[in-house]
Figure 1: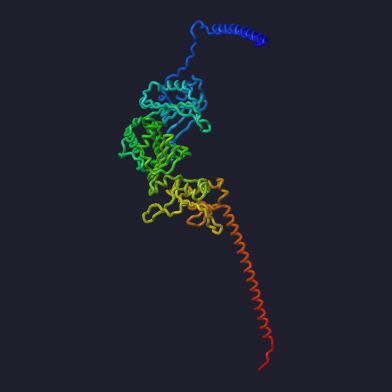
Figure 2: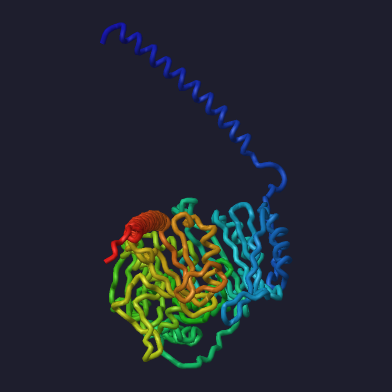
Length: 543
């Protein structure tokens, strides 16, 4: 080692030693400060208390009273009511006509802190359901609200990983967690918390007709409550007990009654919903289950996997099956089964009842929606085609040879209307049209014309109205509407005008030629007369 290196080494050791001594002094001083700060204060420590919400019997309140209580109590948790959205549902008569009498009211309460609540009451302001969802999953707030509603003390009648069901007399409550979604519909990775409390009635239905539940044998004319009873008995055999049955609910779209539904809640998180049409014809049965073991057992017991498989959708985890008049979708990943009940092939009355009455825009959009083959597929799924009326049997029957672009549907004031689409429009045929509509429901046809006047598709079509196949000028009494392609019709009219002009020109030419011929004939006659006169004037020699 060089001498210079020894000097530097001694200096470095000295610096390190000084640094260590300074560090010891610094940390001793810091420890003294920490110990001084951490010293226990004199007296009792302050404890932050959680707000306590009052325990309230909400189902003895009026809807307005429930809203006020929610507002006052949740303020204790710094949760503020921002908005109230109110909805009213109405009664309907047996034909599905909306009445003025109120069936139920609903108040949706929008709070901050990702909290929403709903209060449902019948026409007498009798609370039937209270529900709540906490999208941010705040467990502290959710627990406080459950205490406020009194659920903590209710007996538990069913429980699984995500749901807990309680019952207290004629009230049943379910608390559950759910996956939250963002604005794009994607999962956020967080769970929300929700609860629902309903007023129920004991299940004591006596069926009009005892039957076994077999999804292959259901038809639209079956009584929905009889089917519900058969479902309850079927579930008992596979170890699932009915927890409660909901009241029947009606639902409407655009102010028109769509149908009725009733829920049956079973153990092991199985929910069965039976839906009927507005005319109370069987429509569909939905089965939802969160337990994978129960869902697997249910699929096997129903025997659906032995039906004819018509397709699948790997993205949705879905398989599609058919058996006679039943279409079934099985969503294994979502643990959901959808049974759609269609009318039997020869039940034309029910098939027509299941159709929706199209407006002008519906017909125009369908006509323009694709190739004739694609349009036929849509028509077959939404209307009735491939049929004819048998005068001997006096009923509608299937006709495989019928034009599939000729289809039938119901109207408000007549059992059937017919529409024909034509894609072989000819310039040479003045009767060649795009859409033909026939109905004895004059009001429906007038509504179609009124919709046509305000439709964006008006620029594509012109129309002609007829009665008994004769053109009428005033829309007071008619039974046919002929919609013709406006561009084609313009060419046809232009051709007609040209043809008429040519006919008029030809007739005028013929008239002038006839006049000329008459003139020539007259001239020849005059020449003959002149010659005859000259002949008569010429002296004759006496014999």
